Length: 151
Ligand SMILES: Cc1cc2nc3c(=O)[nH]c(=O)nc-3n(C[C@H](O)[C@H](O)[C@H](O)COP(=O)(O)O)c2cc1C
Image (cartoon, rainbow, N blue to C red; front, side, top):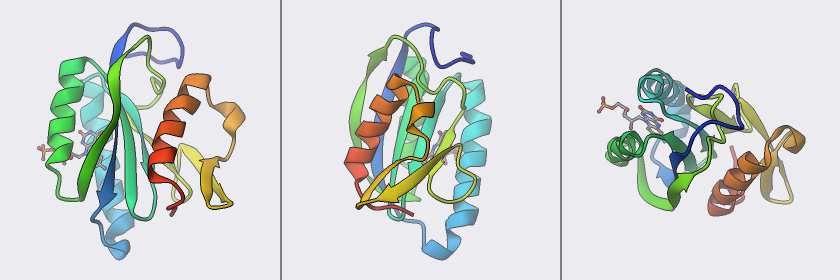
């Protein structure tokens, strides 16, 4: 698996958004469960990515061998913990943007790998300078889709 954010070989990348069905009180437990499932299974499937979490929405980027990404997206689509999935972008890219993470947590709460700030109704990384240009691009797609709805 690619360990750096630059270099590596072409991979398939899929970005989608969905609406969460997790009741607020269950959120910490259920999110921990999702990250634990994602991190253990993604390693074996050479999948890396990031999951952006807000109060009501998810946006996720999945990167890896095309067949593995499509198989995973199929499984994720059938997951009752969210609904109204919509693919925002998909296709082959030169290299992984999130090669360092089997699944990075992007949120303004909890133990985020990429912490978010909220201002003027929009969400943005707490330390934008720490993102690569490719990560910023993906992040902009995700953020634009789910907008101001933050945790
Ligand atoms: C928002 C969201 C993101 C998820 N991301 C992943 C992921 O990256 N990798 C993964 O294996 N499962 C992920 N899951 C969980 C899968 O939907 C599924 O429950 C899990 O892979 C176990 O599948 P199985 O019960 O068919 O074995 C995610 C679920 C949700 C709701």
